Amino acid sequence: MADVDSTPTVEPTAAAAAAPAAMDQSDDPTEEATASDEHPGTKEQAEVGKSGADADPDADADPGLYRYIKDELFTSEIYKVEIQNLPKFVGFNDLKKFLAKHGLNPHKIKLFGRQTFAFVTFKNQEERDKAMKMVHGMQWKGQVLSVRLAKPKADPIQRKRKQQREQGDEEESRPATKRQEAEAAGEEEEAGEPFSVQIANVVTPLWQVPYEEQLQRKQQEVEAVLQRLAKEIGSTNKAMVPWIFAQKGKYNNMCCPLEDIQPSPSQTQYRNKCEFLISMGADGQDKTIGFRLGKYKGGSCAVVGPAETTHVSAEAKRVVAAFQKFIRTTAYSVYSPETYEGHWKQLTVRTTRTKQAMAMIFFNPQKLEEEELDSLKSALKIFFTEGEGADSGVTSLYFVREGQRTSPKPEDMPCELVAGEGHILEELLGLKFRVSPHSFFQVNTGAAEVLYSTVGEWAQLDQDSTVLDVCCGTGTIGISLAKVPGVNHIQHNVKLE
Image (cartoon, rainbow, N blue to C red; front, side, top):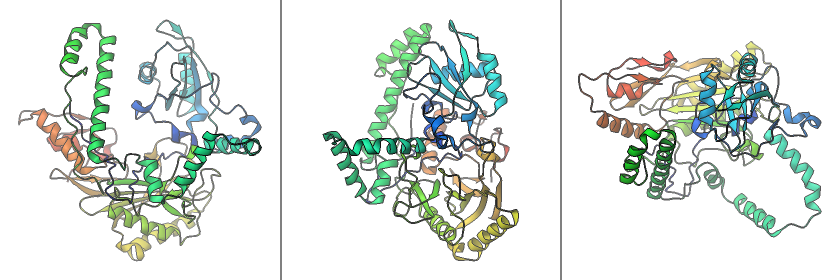
């Protein structure tokens, strides 16, 4: 087994790099802390849950905690159920497979340690009601399941601020403990650090760790995963116990051999896609484009620009600077996840080795008339084709209306080409790929080449080999190995120049 480090967080200078976390495209503030069902490995959450609801018990007295729940705004929290009496030791994958077996497609699943209940949300009322009717009373591993409606989760930032208000008077009248004094001193010390360091500490916590040590840590983490997998294979398939026992003896308790982690060819400017939030800057500057300094649930909406980061390409930084200059000349304010007012939300930038750049600006139209939106798009086009933004390198410019969506799929949002080509070209292993706005493409092209080359060496393909690339996304793996038909439900993803 081999692995490639595609997201190095090493920083050779004091100008910290901030690796951009994938920004959730939902207007639901509770979505930030919960993994989507596309990433099952991050599903199980060790949260302290209360049977009946995971919402704030005082929410009825403070409707502001649920302000994000509106009829015209998509959030799966309004289609939420609690499944009780689950079998012991059931994990996320077990529950997801069980629901899928019965034709159910959950949007989110939340487990609570070893508790025998879970919260499950769905994309619409029809799917939720179907699940309630089908699962309630069903037997699973000797347990009779029960299902009931669950309250939505309270807005984390509103809940935090309410708690701070309630605790404020009490804390002022009570002498601080040594631990509280130490924590306060640590916060003051961190607050005095440059924003470049603060953002690096938040989103790339290993940025001060030498890259070789990062690779060693990853090697150890993967070894631990393979050791756990060996245990699970032995406990779930008794017929394989003799084989797994022999494997563990040969490979340090792992189920298979593990080669050394292969490093990324580049440790700086390696990301070809970045998603930037538009908000108030941590320095007090309005309409700032950058990375969020903290988490929404932690009470922070401030952002820090990418100018001093080293993992973001110079091409992307130019695009950000141009867009920031443009939006600051407009009368439209930034979108607030607290009040749901404002317009400018997010900027996604994709760059390629061919020096092309795609920019997608996410804008909440609120109640603006079509004529005003057309005028804004026209101004965008002029700025980036004839004005100050003409030198930014943008070759594909999209305007995305991200309002109060009723669909949970980002690709369902209206995505309008304002200027330039409808795609950009990226080179990988001598091939050129057309990348469209919603295409999946590895964010570190150089590391992807290392990975695909390793796959090709191991596959030992010849002229008589047939490669089936199922769920291929942009088709980079299969196409780089051989000329194969792309099999994927998103048809516009696969294009080969």
